[in-house]
Structure formats: structure tokens, C-alpha cells
Image 1 (cartoon, rainbow, N blue to C red):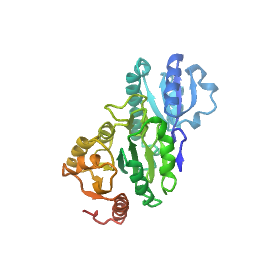
Image 2: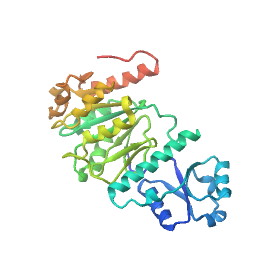
Image 3: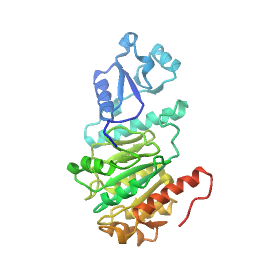
Image 4: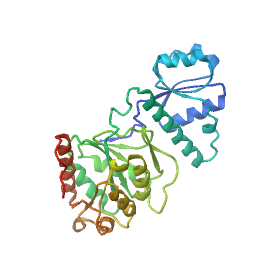
Length: 319
């Protein structure tokens, strides 16, 4: 089943600032990412707020010790100080960078304060990119239909496509899949056993809280750009990132896959003889970096066995 709900991150914000413009812009930040703003007020209005216990993270511009003490008592995340650098963003590019800086600050504050995990202790979960182009939907459907109901990794599905066909394609692919498929359209934590469809019309970014759309264009000729996606994801997840190349034209992502393989990541590919277009998998196979080349069904079986072995504490299966 395809899930279209915007954002699934269990995070609520409180905004306290004397500057009305800053409050509006921070509210806009939350709206872009599907985050709930529970409190947005000036310090003088603090005493009138009735929902302060429902706030997970506070963005605060005040030195009022009464307010700060109350937040400390409820053990909420606190981002304290000058927020003008965030609100001064003037272009979509600078706004996207500011959004990420603020999300990173929230994630770092969460770690520093040792508060309850927003990601259900899934920080070390492997992330697998499913890269596809021409002929990819047919291959992906076979692959996903062969996966079990539970899988101890997160899957990112990147399919070269135009925006108009994206939602319809997700519905077809998800029809018989046992795992849920979710469109990335807000700040979204990456959870085990879930497939996340990468948007066509906007590049995504990663932070300690998950994945989020930026509103900016992908680099390069393809939408989404698998090369760009792998660069961004590798920067965040390192050796926990892996990729499977399915049927498709071109060499999108092959150079990034080379770097990933050199850093201990898994690089798998669909067998060329069962591809509608074999150019994409062949581009990585010819680099001699693939640990496994197989049919979509056998790739699914190998991925399932990989995590069964890991859960049992046994050596990983090598091919």
C-alpha cells in the first residue's frame, strides 16, 4: 500500500521569539517539512500557553530564565540563540541549506541530551538504494513481491520518471508488495521494513532525523538523479549505504557506486540477460565492483538471507 501522508516524524516544535518575522519563517520551515508547531509566541505570551508539555523541541530567542528553566524541567530539546541566520535566507538554495542546518542542530541536540529516540533506535539500520530506469518498474515489482513482510533495512526507490507518472507507478508497484511504500514529501525518518519513493521533481537531503525534500532541482539530466542521490546518501550513511542497479539506460550512479564499493558498501545488479535495457547494470558490472548479479527474484532472496544471517549472528553470505 502506498502511503501519501506528509511526513511521519514524531516531532513537534515550539517557537519563542520577540521577532514576529522569525516566528513566521520558522513556522514556514515546519510546514515545508510536515512538522507540527504546537506553540509559536513571543516571550511575553509564554504564560498564556497551555500546550508546552506537548513540545519535543524548542527554537528559542530569549534569555528569560523562567522560560528556559521550564523547558529544562520538561527535558525538551532546546535550540537556543540567534536564529536570524536561518531567517535571512533569500533564495531557494540558501533556504534549503538553512533548513538542513536547523535539522542537523535539532538532531545534534537530541543526541547531546540523550532524549528518547525519534527513530526508534534504528540509527544503525542499513539503507539500500533501488536504482532503476527503463524497464525498472517491471523488475522492481518482481523484486518487491519476493521480499518478506519484515526486513531489517530501509529501501529508497529511485526511478527515472516524469512527475505525472510517479504516483500511478507507485500504486502499481505496491499492489502486491508486502512492505509499505511511502512517498517522501516531508521530513521522514527511515524505518526498517519500509520503502521510500524518491521524488522526481525535487532533490532530497539527509540528516540525523531522516530524509526530506528540498524543493531544489536534481543535478544532471535525470530525474531523480541516482548519482546525486548516492552522493547525498553516502555523505550521511557511509558504509551503511548500499545499492542495487536494476534495468535502465545510461550510466547514472555508476561512478558513485565505484566509490561506495571501495568503502565497503554492497553493490548489486540485475542480470543483464533479464533486463529490458541492460546499460545501467552493465555500467557497474563492467567496473568489477558487484558482489552479486542475479534476477530480481534472486536479488530479493539474497537480501532476505543477508538479514536473516545478520539477525542470527552468522557470517554474511558471500557470492
